[in-house]
View 1: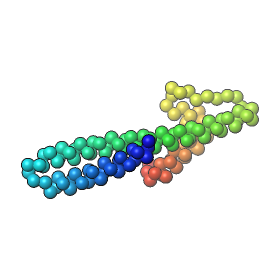
View 2 (view 1 turned 90 degrees about the horizontal axis):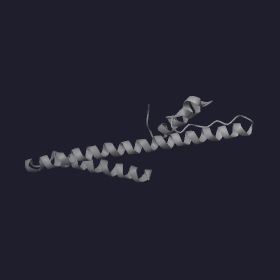
View 3 (view 1 turned 180 degrees about the vertical axis):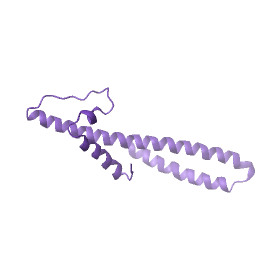
Length: 118
């Protein structure tokens, strides 16, 4: 599904560029209609960018969470008491994790792999 959203975003961006070129060279009677089309495409691109960014963020968080859960499972095998993540909290694993840097670094690695800088 994420690949589909990424390809759809690329298509929307191409259509937006094409629509802007048409708007610049359009006659007066079509200018208003083409301007509305450009506005519609800009909104669609913003919505799709949000969807793609959310999917990337969720993937990075899921990978970090799986890593932390695996570490906790190994610690339990060594005799540590059980520790469970509460589902209602927003990112509780960052606060109560024994190594929150690992979780944050995996998140920043995911962003850098996608070319994002924070």
